[in-house]
Image: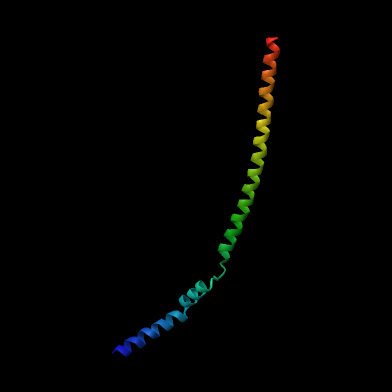
Length: 87
């Protein structure tokens, strides 16, 4: 009875491990995974979006610098006008 149980469990284990589950475990242990086309496309799309966001960030920094410069010019003009008005 024990021998039959061990043989049955062994046969079931061999069938399971030689199937897709066993191959998936083997790839996981090896550290390689089957390439997923949808996942690769998604990663490429996200990289494109990241590049676009970085470009927008650069343009925003340039606009902020221009705004700061314009504010300094306007503030400087008001101070100069106030000094000339006091004379």
